[in-house]
Amino acid sequence: MADIKKPWAGRFEKPTEPSVEDFTESVSFDHQLYKYDIQGSIAHATMLTVCGLLTEKEKEAIILGLKEIEKEIEQGNFSFQKGLEDIHMNIEAALIRKLGDAGKKLHTARSRNDQVALDLRLWTRESIGQVSLLIEGLQSELAQKGKAHIDLIIPGFTHLQHAQPVLLAHHLLAYVEMLERDRERLADSMTRVNHSPLGACALAGTTLPIDQEMTAQLLGFSKPCSNSIDAVSDRDFCLEFASNIAILSMHLSRLAEEWILWASPEFEFIELDESLCTGSSIMPQKRNPDVLELIRAKCARVYGNLFFLFSLMKALPLSYNRDMQEDKVAIFDIASTIKASLILLEKVVKGTTFKPENIAIACKKGFLDATALAEYLVIKGLPFRQAHEVVGKLVRRAAQEGKMLKEFSLDELSQFSPLIDVGVYNVLGVENCIKHYKGTSSTSPSAVRERLEWWLTSLGRSKKAQ
Ligand code: ARG
Image 1 (cartoon, protein in one colour):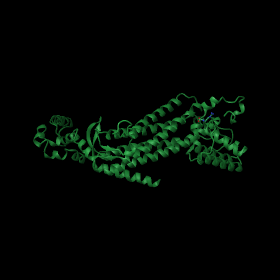
Image 2 (cartoon, protein in one colour):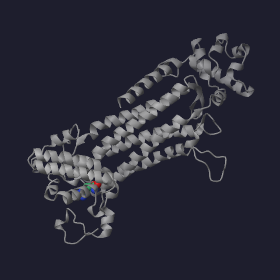
Image 3 (tube, rainbow, N blue to C red):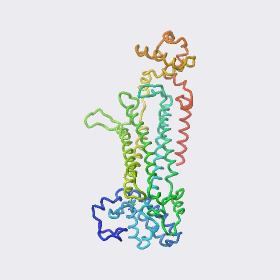
């Protein structure tokens, strides 16, 4: 493509080596920014006109030309040229081909350095909105599942060992809360993403009379960046987005991992929808939870991209450096990976059937009511450490005899503590245990119902508002 006239060709005598063109181009991936590039150029042209740097006629022609180019790209009729390096020069060259001199004026008071920073900020802003919506979809599905099984008790785990009984809804709502903080982090980052770098130009600003407030406002930014060098140099907003997505994908990987376990024959708490499973090419009986496994794996991919971005930016001198062109490879991958994971996980949650019979069997194992029994003794006046020891001894006996705590007679129980009376049978067994939880964050049925209703209403409300 050495025959294409590059916008910067003026100071060069020699044509670019084709291998250099191949190595330095970014249009093969940054073409994804076309929409934001055009949106930014329209605002820029509008501002240049108000500032007397373009005529009204030139502006009209530029806007029309840019919209045509947008359509051509969307319809797949635009031919991207590697020789024109990136999306910015491809669009500019196409505009010049269409308009001649008017097109050549668009880059007045602008550099690709502030242009690419602008496009990325617009892209990040939109990606935040898209990811947030997908998170909400997943939250809704989790809350619906909780509601569908509002009374279902499951073993709660610590160290992956049976710990205390909890309501399934409580367990699922734990993820809803985590996901909410993920959404909050993304929303909070908007206050830093939403600044306009336009006007920074290459790094120092411009000697031309421009109005940065105007472009910022036209593009819905809260303000222009305050320092032109910072505006073109930093990619902390990309890192913040990537970090927030990394936390989110960590949450998804935990849910994925749990459900992989729950779907295994060792647990059999759930059955995954067959249309979301895959088989084995050799073992005819297999129905594998590959979607969940891949969601677990995609977290590693997001982390990889995050560390790539950190390494990319580390120790870069100010201001813009070409290294930063590679940021897009990572950040685009992060966004498409998390969006796909969220969409698929929502489907998995929706399609999953819980198996209360198997869960009930599991609830009989592991002395899930032992802590409640210790707390029963505390109410009777025994210091907690002593109560802990009494129940510990009881559990040892029960394990030797292959019994559940509630299967001991009152005589047997009261040998361990004279404080135990017939009322003990009101706290033994997971169903009884659950009823006794107190506190708004506990798995008490009334607290869980209340929080679940709150979530269903608030998620339903935001769905309606969309
Ligand atoms: N393609 C470049 C990037 O993505 C655009 C900015 C290039 N600026 C420059 N002076 N070469 O970073």
